[in-house]
Image (cartoon, rainbow, N blue to C red; front, top):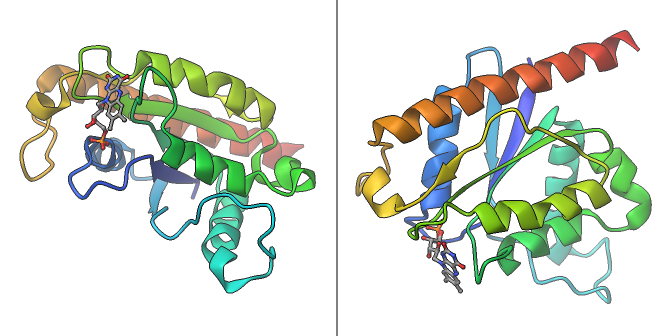
Length: 191
Ligand SMILES: Cc1cc2nc3c(=O)[nH]c(=O)nc-3n(C[C@H](O)[C@H](O)[C@H](O)COP(=O)(O)O)c2cc1C
């Protein structure tokens, strides 16, 4: 069964981006598994840390989860019209050493979604991720978009997706990305 590792770029307990990932997981067809990975224990990037140290166990674990997954999904907040440092830090860690990039990310289906309390739907943050996805050699999914504005009105206090228009967007994305990941895995199995 194809597996997608999903990461929310916010540590907030009531993060709208985490709520959005949960909504994508619910809308994803039953033949595909979404695994939401925590980034809470990932330290700040420090090239002096011993790669084998206990502090970097969460980084090693996340790297292997991404490597063995069939797809990668990022839910990005937008900070100051760009990528949030919390999530960029995670992707920077799992891209080291650079000789591992091909094994972890090369040709891997990858998609970005995002939610903001503002009116811009994380369009600028999602666009800012594109050079990163390219640098890592991923296979970006551009089939459908999930751009959530005014997130406080879209999700209930307990995290349920309540907006019908956004739900339609999330369902189309979830089905489209699952198909994209499954198709790519089939092609990889054949070759
Ligand atoms: C440092 C900072 C900068 C922000 N800059 C933007 C921004 O440029 N555009 C935007 O739409 N929202 C911006 N926001 C608001 C976030 O979209 C909002 O806090 C959102 O809830 C964050 O996602 P989360 O709920 O998953 O934590 C910013 C928030 C913070 C903390």
